[in-house]
Structures are given as C-alpha cells and as structure tokens.
Image (cartoon, rainbow, N blue to C red; front, top):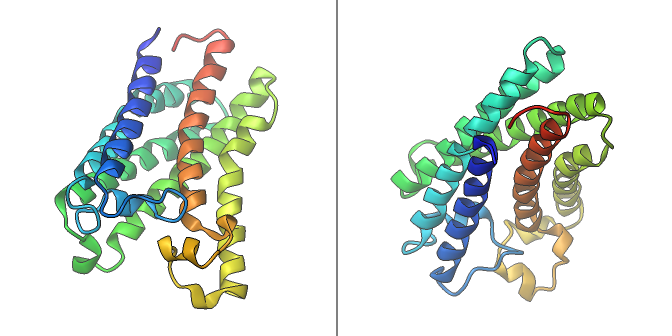
Length: 221
C-alpha cells in the first residue's frame, strides 16, 4: 500500500474517531441529523469534547495533503481544468485545516471577527467540492470511468441548495437548524446539518475514488 493510501486511511480514522469521541460527551447528546459540524467541534457548545473533533478534523485534512500533491503532479501537462482542480483541492485542504485549528484555539472566532468561522468553512467546502468535481470529470474521462464519482461530489451540494431554498421560501419562521426541529416534526431533508454531514462524507469518498482511479490506470499511489 502506497503512502497516499495510508494517509487516506489515517485521515478517515482521524475524522471519524474525533467525531465519535466528541459526540460521546456532547451536552445532552448529539443529534447528527439536526446539529451541524461546527457545534460538535465548538468550545462554546461542546466544552469537554470539542477539541476531539476539531483536532481530528485538522489532522484529517492535513493527512490528505499527500493525495493533493499526487493529484497536482498528475495534472502537470494535462488540461487547465484538471490543473485548476488540483490547485483548488490543495487550497480547500488549507482552509479545512484552518477550520479545525480555529475551533481549537478560539472560543468563538465569529464574536471577534464577524462571520470568520463561516467564511473559513465556506471557502474550504467550495474549494474542495469544485476542485474534486473538476478532477473527477477530467480523470474519469481519461480512465474511461463512469459518471457516478462526479455525482458523489456534486449531489450533496445540490441537496443543500435545494433544501435551504425550500426553507427560505416556505419555512422562514424556523430559524437556524437545531434539535428543536426534530421535536417540531420538520422533515429531515430540510436540515442543513443532515446534508452537511453527507457532504463531508462525500468529500472523503471522492478523494478515495480519485485515488483509486489513478491506481486503476496504472499509476503508483
């Protein structure tokens, strides 16, 4: 097994273990369907366990840099779209590490700098999703792969957009997603938190799919 695969496996383990350890001590129990990732990693909302997920997330993102490096090297001499995708993945991982470090170091950064946490998270997710989509379409076509890896990347984003648009148009009185939504019987598909967790899973699944794609076409990972 190559270095990239080892780092990928350790990355998955770091994020999953950090999330489970943080959820165990979350005050009142953590509701995966209606509570967002940032709450699980927060010193404010999860004083005893926030560091577990924040640290696991920062480490998990950092462990993906060897994959980003391989994608960047593979993109040399390829199309501009593939090179841009590799750069965006690298940038997204930088911001992702920043999100974890920010949650570790600050009680609530957005109280100091308005919307700072939200901006870091948005830049990370968008950079990673767009970068992975560009890589998946370019590399998949070269390898003769099917379109489903690209759909894994884009569908959670589309679902987030559709669900939040529906909330804006039809359920403006709900406010921000929380555990009270479950008590009110709000449908799961309205929940930003639910789609956010699925989107995070799709990021790691897409990274593994891309690494598997380069391995199948005879390149060392």
